[in-house]
Amino acid sequence: MNDYRREELNIVFYLDSDYEEIQIGETRFGQAVQIRGIDDGQALRLIVDIIRQFGMEMVFTRYLPKPQQIPVDKYLKQVEKKGKYFLPVEVGGLKFSFGRIPAFNQAFLSIEEVIAGSAVSWDNWLNPFLEVSGFAQAWVTDAEYDYWQNAKSLLLYETEGRSYKHLPTKSNGLPPPLDGLEIDTSDNPGRWVLKSGYREAVGSRMWLSSLFWQLAGTDIKDVELSANGFDVQYLSNGITKIIAAENCFCDGTTEEAQRKLRSILYDKKP
Image 1 (cartoon, rainbow, N blue to C red):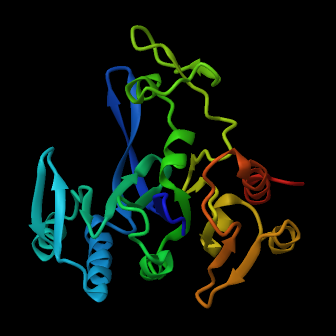
Image 2 (cartoon, rainbow, N blue to C red):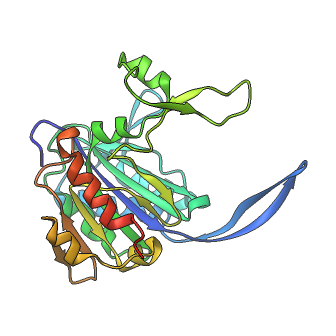
């Protein structure tokens, strides 16, 4: 874990959904009518169990938009009763965010360090989620690096006073008057791409389930991974753990390793 940089654990779960088509004007849309997989309540329950196990303060902080504190158990009851509305919360220097993307058959949980080093061990936070039905993958990133590797809006750069003149741009593909330019992230080594049930993403540490290999349409590339210097471990629950680097990918000096890892995991070879 980097001493002075904030890290983030990203977890993706496969959702099995039933869709129906609805007609709005002259356009037909697909709408999820039933979603099977991890929900807001289950995700929050596992987080609360870990917090209690670690002896952390049992109070969440929410921003609505002003800071508001709420007891952990009270918030859990609210979410479990409604079955949804797990809004981002903070505790112990960590921020927890959960959501679903039905169009890509996936749910996601991100655990981001607000204060560097707060997670201590990502394995402790991840292990309970490895047993959840539909777990597809998880990976650790540098929070700031991941953000800017995937930031497309020019306004984000302007707001932060960051220059984008040296970066490639492309049309955002929207019709007038919403059309304009956006940052082209398609060649960024740290980019992630939404796929059905998983994401094309890389991290210094990765956990990949047998479901992931099925969804990605590739086989476990243990020989190729080892040949390129990546440490491959097989966990008892059928998860493949890949340690690509001691510290998070955080700048261009790790570009070669990121591209190698991405090629091995996601390039479809004959």
